[in-house]
Image (cartoon, rainbow, N blue to C red; front, top):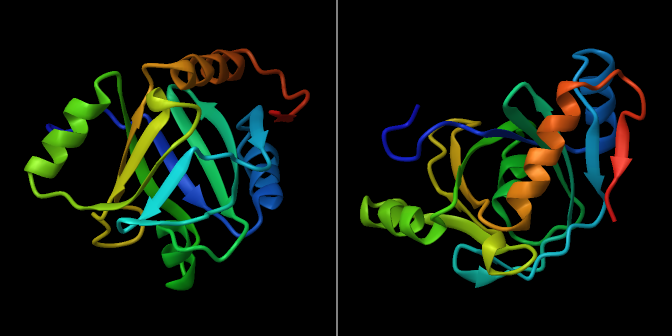
Length: 175
């Protein structure tokens, strides 16, 4: 439990091959089902304060209450994902904290000296997210994500489906 951000809700893994990563999590670790978005559509995305046309695929599944996110960036646009891969890393890149008071937590983090590495929005104002530049070593980036809108309901759906998953239909495309 973080005294600043609360409980970790998601571990995010940056991978080079999202299909191989989903297969590993299903076959070796028994985690699924995976909700796969081949082409994430962001409303906007900024890397270190500058607009970036990042393209990515993501997959989401739960292991208990912890959501696992797989991210494959599919272009070379500037992002913290690209920086992570270019540094020779692959795997756990961030821990995400979810909030229904996004602006309050965002402002609190900035007031404590956190710096935004990249941020964006998916599906309207209640779909904001920010990654703070906290990586002292791989896997320590802090993300905050607004779950006050449709994203929160979608995340709850994924958690509920994982609870009773029987191993069938392990990858479920999201349109």
